[in-house]
Image (cartoon, rainbow, N blue to C red):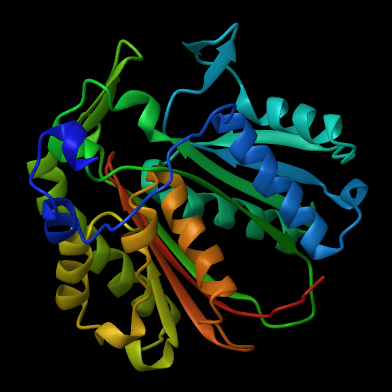
Length: 306
């Protein structure tokens, strides 16, 4: 990466904290990443896929389709495509499918929608899939942008249970950031780094403070904070502003980079796989991104709720 960008060896890790990341490989796409993680989540859960009531898919990049060896960038409804691909793999996901926006806070919004539907009794089992193929749009991007972003996907199943689950949510949008990032002609990813660097730590703090106020929780009540992996400086500044002990914050940026909208959900998946979350732990997720969108949620972790 450093050689490609004409940078000195070691400078990317020093500036961003990133040691490695995943980019789409041969034959991979946004759709294949999303389908793979959805497939694995269903298999791991032991849930009969026919019992899924809804599929929620989100991304913050225009979907791309590989046709005859050429990457075609076009907008279309991605959630039905993921359902179709899952069914192609003999996973009978026969349910409503929707797309959710919200940039790098989209996972919080998706969780809030799913939780509300389950709590109301309208749905019982909901699969949430987040995916991003940022690398497809970095060829012409500023090198400071290119050194940060990566590709990734994650999937989560929410289900009705008698166990303690979500405590509450806090979500907010400040529309002044609507133009802080864009995809020019579906070819080049642009982000106003200065505005984002100034806003993101404040959004981190606002999301946490408002969640704690709403739930009447205190920082010491939370066992683990998992933030959007925007960049090491942004995370550290957010931690400092929020007065969270660093040892309570999970960071996986060093081996995943910033996978855009999928980064927060990917971090949750990594924390689970690494054993950072124990049965009954109170976990806080913090998302923030261009728009400006930001939000947080707190929930009690259970290993096998299904």
